[in-house]
Image (spheres, rainbow, N blue to C red):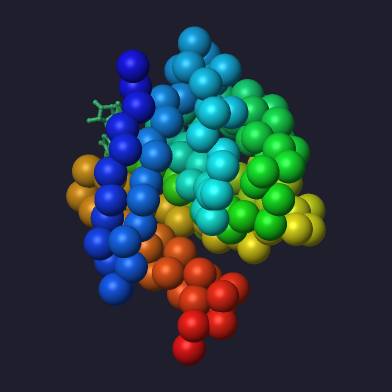
Length: 139
Ligand SMILES: Nc1nc2c(ncn2[C@@H]2O[C@H](COP(=O)(O)OP(=O)(O)OP(=O)(O)O)[C@@H](O)[C@H]2O)c(=O)[nH]1
């Protein structure tokens, strides 16, 4: 059904990950998975940027959910191993189109990487764990 639940061990944390399918037919189910969520990882396919407006609509809907109030947001721009354009421009465009600069109640980070090569996956996990430590003052 396009759902996958797993636990990732990283930097002394057990990170429980709910990978929830993005297909239109599965979106109604997203709302069953928001309880006790510390972070939302929103994955964008860098080879389908024409869908960014659709992504923004769905992203806004999800973030308006009360149960996600204050959760950290990491926007993972995936498939960068295939991307040939200007990376800084890409980053700026996504920040603008998703309105990340306007997010008031969420700390956020944008990561350009690749699930295929592993590029910047560690950076994403570092951000999540450091952010969690800061939030809960585990020093
Ligand atoms: N080149 C490249 N291909 C990738 C990368 N990540 C995923 N893919 C490929 O993209 C296709 C779709 O991957 P999925 O993981 O099914 O995509 P998804 O977004 O989780 O799909 P849904 O669960 O339906 O939302 C597969 O053929 C993957 O091998 C990447 O970083 N680089």
